[in-house]
Length: 143
Ligand code: AMP
Image 1 (cartoon, helix red, strand yellow):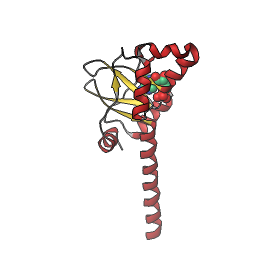
Image 2 (spheres, protein in one colour):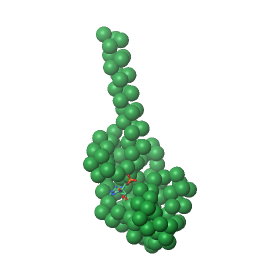
Image 3 (cartoon, rainbow, N blue to C red):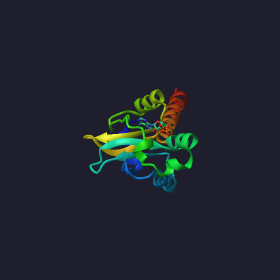
Image 4 (tube, rainbow, N blue to C red):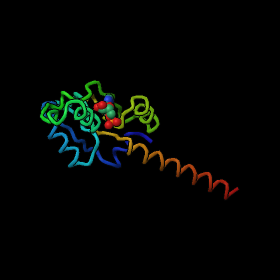
């Protein structure tokens, strides 16, 4: 299964913010959409960074509540790993495992078009394993 198939099932909606939005508003956005990370883009949908709940927790632990008034650009990870619609579920799992993160923005022609989370990947992988098990069961039953 590919990232294209996942996005066409779950939708291409992406929650993105500009780099100068304050962290307090980013936290409200994470809570409102019940998500774990927000992609940071410029006005042309070019990816500038990603901020996840982990970045906020780290800043709160290190600097206290004053980090909430800083811009998102101060906390985000600027070196963002991305994937394309042609990546497979297994490739995405490998990128996330190697990079130790749970979110992967999807780019087309250099522009943000979607986000894949570890939850999306695990759901599809479980479905694949169940389909494989079912195919083996029917094969054995028909032998
Ligand atoms: P996560 O596990 O996605 O909540 O993120 C853990 C850490 O990795 C945070 O510091 C994020 O800013 C960073 N991060 C999340 N996704 C990516 C990504 N696709 N590329 C690079 N860093 C990321």
